[in-house]
Image 1 (cartoon, helix red, strand yellow):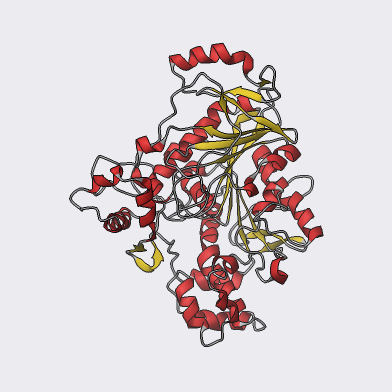
Image 2 (cartoon, rainbow, N blue to C red; image 1 turned 180 degrees about the vertical axis):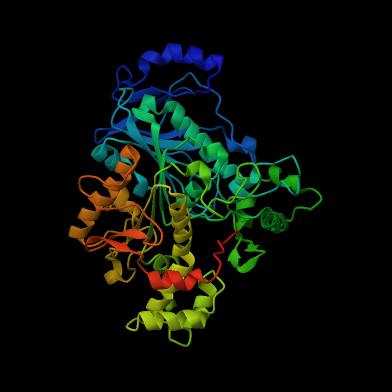
Amino acid sequence: MHMNRRHLLLTAAMAPMAGFARAGTADPVILTTSGPVRGLVQDGINVFRGVRYGADTATTRFAKPKRPDPWTEVQPATGYGASSPQRGGDARQSEDCLFLNVWTPGLGDGGLRPVMVYIHGGAYNSGSGSDDLYDGTRLAARHDVVVITVNHRLNAFGYLYLEPLIPGVFPDSGNAGQWDLVLALEWVRDNAAAFGGDPGRVMVFGQSGGGAKIATMMASPAAADLFHSAATMSGQQVTASGPLHAERRARTLLEALKIDASRPAAIAELPAARIVEALDARDPLDETQGLYFGPVLDERMLTRHPFWPDAPAQSARIPMILGNTLDETRTLIGRREPEKFDLGWEDLPGALALHMRCDIDPGTVVAAYREVYPERTPGEIFFAAATAGRSWRGQVEEADARARQGAPTWVYRFDLPWTQDGGKWGAPHAVDIGYVFGNLDKANAMPGEAAAAKRINEELGGAFVSLARTGTPEHAGLTGWPMYRVPSRETLLFGAQTRLVRDPRGEERKLFAKVPFNQWGS
């Protein structure tokens, strides 16, 4: 643990409080490495919301985060902390955003429970760990695990690469958000036992951008040994942003802020709201897209790309689940562009050219899909090809790389359709989150047909817990899930029935394998 003399004295004074309710109340008080916090008990689970793991990042804008100054007075941990500044989203936003939330069945009881740390999605631009869909009460209660969700810096606050423009001033700016996650995992290591968890069995799991952040940490030396298993849900990071591209994006944001190029450090003095207003600038590498923010190959946090040209050696022993959904882009694109459901054949190639995010002849793609799936409409082919070319391809790259490495890897595809709007959305991006947490009745959940949903809830949630607890996803309610290997590409499909398939969508995979994979932002 990282403790100073003040904290050692604090620990001695507060030790009797650890794991026990404070006198005269039913609220549990725990001594963390920074000071005591008071949570509450909900549905038999000890809940601590808004626990500070880092200092206010307004004091370290674009720099590595700092540990908070220790405190001696018991601090309330009953409400979520602020989210990172962002467009829209949670109304409670602040650069003082380094908070996490804990759900645990026991406190200081030597329980050595697996610790499951969830990293939220929203690409690298938005979101927080306080969404009701991520409430850890049921996961903790049903499976006797400790569940933690995390807030960290996003968009320009977390990933604006200023080092080339101001050498030596903000050397870690391109990955500040990743450094926040490292600090959070150090907090988990140092405090897990007090919250009834096992610091030697920490699992990270995350969806979309959360999965991408995990893939990035698997190649980050600073994150080595901070987690022991991983699961990503529709979130891949094969390559990071190159430093030259990241510099161009930094210049674009400075221009949007009307900051003189001769004085780029002025951005550190701006109100956070001004920076948020500039986030809508168009990306200099593709003006059809908003300005990209994400991890940078900065030779500090990242000295290699996460999964290119191969899987990172440092994570070869970490057991990992990789999952994607059957119809990723039906919500990702279809909500913004509902006309895509009613495309005609003549408009299909042009629509694909804009959305596949890879340089392949769209006419060739259309012809291939029509041959393999002659019954499909143009709209159905659009979403299938956009999913395969844009959202699924990165998972194939990562899973294949780990299989070649011999790393323990299990792959799933989520197929059970969301029942909303008569099943129009299929099994879309983010559909699997509610199943893992057991929160299918929460806002933003996407439940499928009731009987199948109940079964998958137990199978998939149990698989994640089993990976955290034993290093394999198989459990009493789910057997017959072999590791993923090349060329067989064993994949478990969660749908009306749960079944194992070898190389599902193989013709689609081969079609897109003929062109290089270019991760957006790299």
